[in-house]
Length: 107
Image (cartoon, rainbow, N blue to C red; front, side):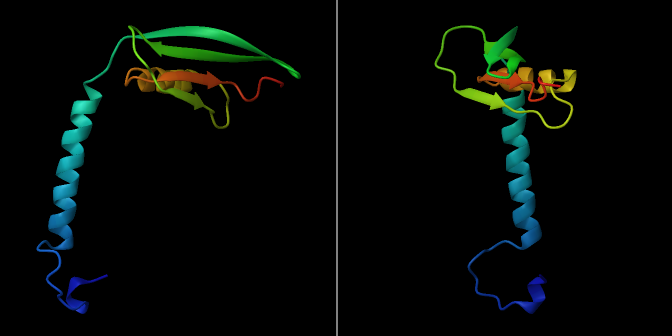
């Protein structure tokens, strides 16, 4: 993994450290703009009837008109917790319709 052990083919004018710094600076700039592009979000608790019972879930939608892509958020252990609601809300603020389900509704 050391640059000294590899032959210099002059393909990349940057060292690994310089390249990583360039990528990191570009990612930080891109993430900063995306984090500020939040839109207002509507939150609604929903019940989904299944053959095994009723699954509780929460639906987040960006306010306003638009063709919003959909996301099915399947939480890990713990089911539908406040932190998962916050994650769904934050994702919806980026312009997605998000359904966060409780996969443990049977217990």
